[in-house]
Amino acid sequence: MIKILIIEDDPELALILTNYLTKYDMEVIGAEDPYLGLSLLTQHEFDLIILDLTLPGMDGLEVIQKIREITNIPIIISSARDDITDKVIGMERGADDYMPKPYDPRELVTRIKTILRRTHSAETPPKEPVLFDADSKAHTITFKGELLELTAAEYDILNMLIQHKNGSVSREQLLYESEHIDDDSSIKNIDVIISRIRQKIARIDPDHVYIRPIRGVGYLLTDRPTPAK
Image (cartoon, rainbow, N blue to C red; front, side, top):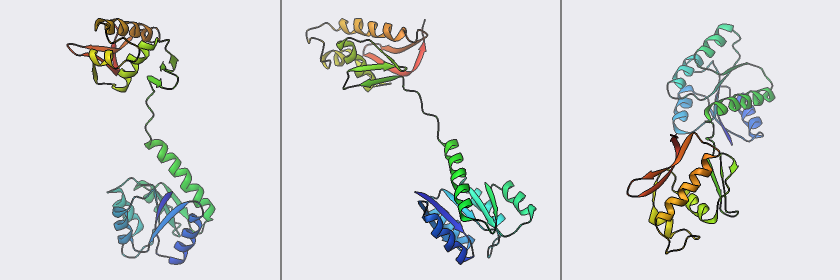
């Protein structure tokens, strides 16, 4: 649910906006006093502020400065003041939009959604691509979206390395926890299997090494590969 703070000294208008925005899955908290609004801002998490400029005790343009000292939350100015200077100063001080009163509440909803879509898109970091993706039901593993043709033993070993990504796994653990390697197999068999897995990975990405040997311990699968020699 979108959470809105309205700093507006006209209680009738604040009530109208609150009732209308609530229909669009928005929770609204109102403050007639700018100092109360600033206090609420430190006590709650809001997605957006609707701010009047003509307020008791502090001009709305000054309130914008106070808000920007503590947060980058989007601000929509809602004001009956039609002086272009107010709009310019408000935007320069950090407001995201300016709506001159009177306006249709439907337009306010559209402006809110547009601003939040833009700001949330900018704040959301791009997802890192999945290098290794194991499907435990199908017993398959893909690398960079391509299916690796693995034997049952190779699947066991690589799957364990994926589960411990960026952490070392001993040869003994790889040997004894694999369901498809005989318990009486040699530890050296693990090195052979690892070598085969690395070859299959190299067919897709020959320029990097993803499985590193850890001296005296075993192996490590990393998502920060080293250049292949």
